[in-house]
Amino acid sequence: MAGIFIEEYHELVSFTVIRTCQSLRPCARLPGCTRAVPMRDTVHTEISTAARAPVPPPPPAQFADAATALLGCRSAVEVYHVIGDFMTEVCPASIVIVNEITPEMTHFVTRGLFGLEDSVFAKAARLVGFQIIDKHSVIVPKYRDLMLGSKLSKIEGGFAEFASSEVSPAIGGLAAKLAGIRDVYTIGIVDGDSILGNIHVCTRKPGADVPASVIERFVLHVHAALARLATTHDLEESNERFQQAVRTTMDGFWSYGEDDRILDVNEAYCQMSGYRRQQLIGMHLSDLEVMETPEQIDAHNRRIIARGQDRYVSQHRRSDGSFYDVEVSVSYLPGDGGRFSGFIRDITERKQAEERIVRLNMELEERVRARTRELSTANIELVNTNAELERATRAKSSFLASMSHELRTPLNSIIGFTTILLKGLAGPINEEQETQLSMVSESGRHLLSLINDVLDLSKIEAGRATACIEDIDLESLIEAVRDMVDPLADAKGLQLVFTSGSDGEPLRSDPRMLTQILINLVGNAIKFTDSGTVTLAVSDDGDVMRFAVSDTGCGISPSDLPHIMESFYQADLPNRAKSPGTGLGLSISSQLAAVLGGSLSAESALGVGSTFTLTVPKVMPLAESG
Image (cartoon, rainbow, N blue to C red; front, side, top):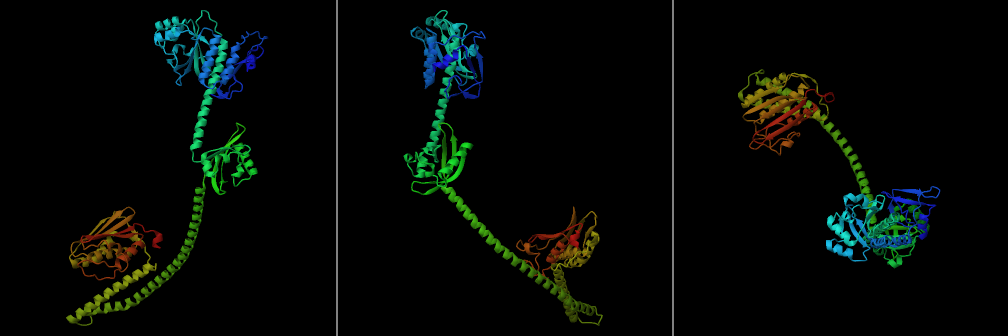
């Protein structure tokens, strides 16, 4: 070590002034030191005889001893004592104060006071009430740059000025006289931007020689020693936290060398594997890894070294020979000959759960496939059934249409001949004959209405009901409807009100179907209204026309209302005999509205009345008219 310092001061070699920055590099002043300290740059200045530059004096013999002692320090307190020993030797009869700087960089904390062989200064300190060790003192702004500088600087004004942040100048001057202090020098324990503390040197001899260059070089070694200790302390704390985490984690932990033999394990892995720690130490990984041979483990470790870390799933063997699934996270640390560290998590339950999920998914997929097959078969059967139903419906409709035509011919004859007889065109008839003939005529007309309804329904269901589109004069159509239903309203003494909110824009639709629907709605309203008013209100609503037929009749119960447009359905009306009719009128009207591209809806309150609303487009789409 002494050779290093002799070489440093040899006149034919360079000396290095270290300046620090925020980046970390190995300490250049202390070979062999593993502490990484901040370094800004390195300025090399060669001192040679040829350049005729002044040659620095050789360091005192104590320099090498002190530097070596700094390397052996295990605490900051030991470093402070080395500082005190060295400084009091190179500056005899001086007082040396060693300070640590606070993290906020605003105060000094005195950690060492050296050079007080006599008790005069101690008496002075007690006299002024000035505490030295562990004292927090404000860094005097005026001298901040000097106190934190890398050069040894003299404080003008002496001790009184130096202590001005703590005591008055008068008391500081008195203390200086009692302690015999002459001059005060200061230097920061700094290396570039890294500031760790400060050293004050108070001389007590007039004209005392203070070797500034030696002290400045020594302080660099002090900084390196303190920085090394700080890093060591941080590493020890970090390692302790890591060891605590390893001890308390529920996951297993192991470390092993490049020879694949286990160096350390935690208690969690012992419980996981069933081995004792002493049994595991020294075991080869292949003794535990079920799925890999020693050669495969070596190849795997080479990949980990190349990548720095890895995570994989494997199986380990317990001490009883059973296997369990694990997830292993491994990292590689190249120091100490190379070491692998890994956390092992028992994932047996997770794997079993995953396998159960896979089995359940397979079972579910099979059930879905089976259900799909069943649905496919059912769909085929449904399609076949629907086809048969459609054929049956067409056959029924064809039969009904044919039968209706066959029945209408004799019915028309019966109605015609009874009309002739009732009018006396075939000769006079008596009152009884007139009554009987009227009953025949009324029954015939009722039967003809029923046949017409059945014929209309069969045509709609068979898809043969087609609309004939033309321009419709709404006023004429409404008047025609009024003419048809006026006699019915007059017979019951009802008021018939027709209103129109149309702007006169023509309606393109099928006039026959539209008239049939309106006559049916108004006729029904008259049929189920004993007193009051029946209203037909026409309104223009953008692209559609609305025809609302309202009455003040008996109304429809909430239970019947959803079914009144079903074929052959007739509502049960309280306190009212069942009305004559087929129950097809509203069903036919609803389906005709659909043929026209519109809809029929109903609102009703029992005992209050009903409103049926027909909505049709102003211009019927061609596809629906075709």
